Length: 451
Ligand code: UD1
Ligand code: CA
Image (cartoon, rainbow, N blue to C red; front, side):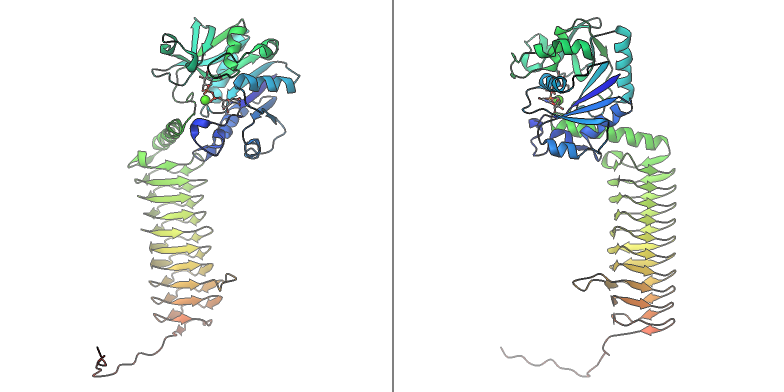
């Protein structure tokens, strides 16, 4: 039987944040969710999450699941105290207890499996993951002979020799739960921090083993925002390298971020300062960026998007967008569309080959195939209370600086005169023009104004 305990009750003072540490995010996912995801892959019988500081917020961040139980540790007197609270509330202590620090978010399930197998092979009382760090600052130092650990000394309790020890505790432990139960209540808080340390179980148990692992970033603990940004960098580097190996070119990878969920096709070129977030899909042969932000959006093949922002939309093949376009949620831009500079589009369907090249706002609209929307066209879709729809039929030409007062329906092949304010529907093949006639007054002299 395998039980997991995730320690997530601490405040995370060193984050200098009003938010609990485990709710800080890495590439859009909280630290706690990441730890949970990697241990869920082991299919444990039960998972306990130790919460305390802002416990409601931490609990609400996790989707309800009958396998996951929250245990409140209040006050928080240390990692060992957290496991004392757990063992008082959970009497059934069969099998193995895997304890994970909630602030070591990049731990891989593969490494957890290795620890469990190692633990079984040694029939250990406890096994933990250790690693060598050139700069071990902030970690508990592990003192071991071969694989057998004598004790762990927390940094603040180290003497001048101990502090130089490069073998550190990663904060991931596999206990024989029965062995642990026998000594858990013997932990004391006679240390610099006056906390009950889980690491003191090591010297209380007989068969304490260390599994030394080479750290490629997965064992990084997060105590402050510098470490948070290092983990973000680790995730992003892995992701971008994966995409590069599968046929994506990054012109300046360091300036770009990609979400783990996003899919990118082959021969896609991602220019500098481009961010692809949420559930996005970029198909083959697209060129994206520089300076582009795309979230929850599907982009089909052969599109070029430059200096633009797109949310929750669908861009079909061979579309050009930008520079400086803003596509807001729920837009569909069909094949061979062209959206140019300073164009904002929201909740609108554009059929094939629609062009909106300059300085427009298009909201709640449907625009038919081949229509051209002239510079400065605005759909006035809001009367202060409600939003209304604009329909423009295919092959239409909307003149520059037209204002379309919605609700309004223009038929197919309609032309509007430049500068018109269109308030009435118009039929197929008509010209709609609504502006005052120009008057020319000849030999006009300005009135002499008095000083
Ligand atoms: C801990 C280990 C240290 C190890 C390091 C690895 C102890 C005493 N030290 O130190 O040996 O090298 O992790 O990253 O365990 N927490 C609770 N309840 C509490 C206190 C903490 O649930 O009362 C939780 C925190 O929310 C956090 C985790 O335990 O997720 C670790 O606590 P933290 O204070 O960050 O321990 P470290 O000083 O990093
Ligand atoms: Ca920590």
